[in-house]
Amino acid sequence: MPSSPLVPEPATGTPGTAVEHARRLTDVVTRLRRALRSSIRTDYPWESLPMAQVELLQTLAAAPLRVGELAARQRLAPNTVSGLVGKLLEAGFVDRQADPGDRRTARIALTPAGQRQLDDWQRAHERRIAGALGTLDPADREAVVQALPALERLARALAEPTSSPGSPAASSPATAPSPTE
Image (cartoon, rainbow, N blue to C red; front, side, top):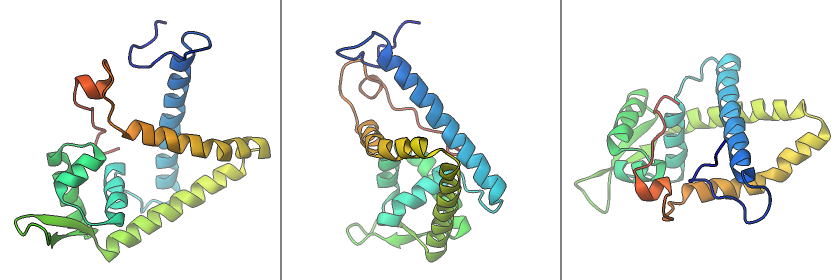
């Protein structure tokens, strides 16, 4: 299979190795997200927030933000974020606050109910992942733990806009994930 022009080949090694690693990582991350999402809803039926709403709550846990700032941080369209915020407002998980720097706009802030929901979500996921890690043999568990710093660096690298020729960020707007994921 020909390599993708968007995935650089390694400077050394077999051609296609970087593409194959990217393909495998994409597959594993997708399956992990799906398995975690479905197992949490099976184990904890109260958990019904779409992932996009959870990600907004996580972002707002750090500080209140305007819708445009939320959209930029989540790499979503402002109208998509407005819709998600509307659902979170209805649920009582966020509220609107006056922006001290610009009285014409409002900041979206996490409510105590939103913080409790986020804390519950986080604890449920931690219990589920800890339980699954406990089923691995010690060598596999250690390999997962040892991979965490590199995975964190990879997540940061993916979050940074790229400007290299031919990259998706340089040639077209980013494709946003579905708000229901």
